[in-house]
Length: 166
Length: 120
Picture 1 (cartoon, rainbow over the protein chains, first blue to last red):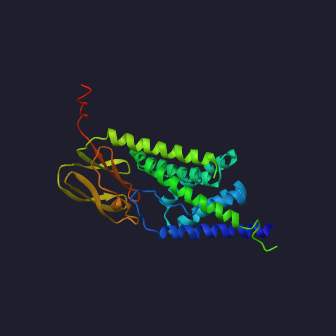
Picture 2: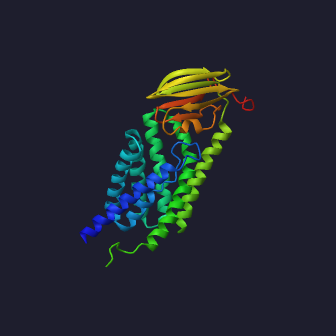
Picture 3: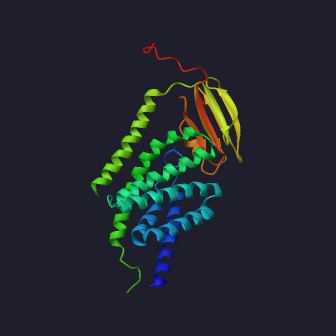
């Protein structure tokens, strides 16, 4: 049982890294800093519903650090951490409220991720005007969160309860 | 999908469009291009001049071009080059940001904003 869990955590973390790489290969199609699909959130979302809050948080932290070391930089990690943690807290709260489906939780997470990154950028660059990027990122975050949420619903439906072949 | 999902998405989108729309109506023409690196002002140009300069950011350079009352970043040696892809700016408060170089190009209007003719 324990080994199962370790293997599943490892699989999900690896999947998060692969998705981060795939996303890093997609050229920025729209010139707004911070606008992205957030494919990696698919893993965090899935983990939240399968592994629970603690497990999902652990996977989230590990993938942020590993992604920064592998594809990014230290300053990029600061932005990922802010976005990743704020988005995680919001997703946990939305899920606990019991009012939202996976799609709603994912939308809230996507928008919170963008908001967290803008907050950090406002502090790092000491420019409050960056808030002007927020509305366009709220729109893109809603759309991206919705798409990721729909994929998440499909993935969770198809995954067996346990990944072991019992 | 639940009803709360749709309400959540609708509220977020409505807030975003209100914010965008509000800016559209209140925006004013700028006349100065201000460059800051790490929050400190490093250069300032008039928006009606023709300018083509190399700006020193934190750990790299960006090329700023001002022409026909528009400011844009046309080249940069940062990895993502998002600042180059950002559209050119002309209205007061608009910005172009290069996160890796901590560089912000921003439009300002130097003189006091004109009082609305109708309000007078």
